[in-house]
Image (cartoon, rainbow, N blue to C red; front, top):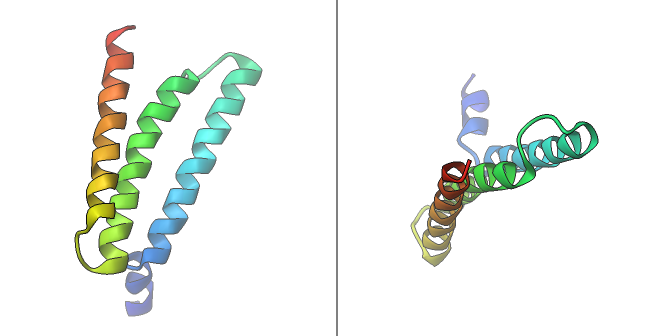
Length: 92
């Protein structure tokens, strides 16, 4: 049980989640392009981009055990994606 919980606390788990977010984005964009259904690609990129950047910030802190310039860059990128997503929603 301890090994199982250690896996969730490891940087490897965060990398797997980040890959999952990228796969999800690709799947949603391909589905929208083929069927015309689902969220628009820009909404997918802005929403999941914010989440991916936040996960990258968590990864940097977890992998290096300290905040750094990479952490600040990742958090700032998450904020930019979030504001972009809100701007896209405001135009609807």
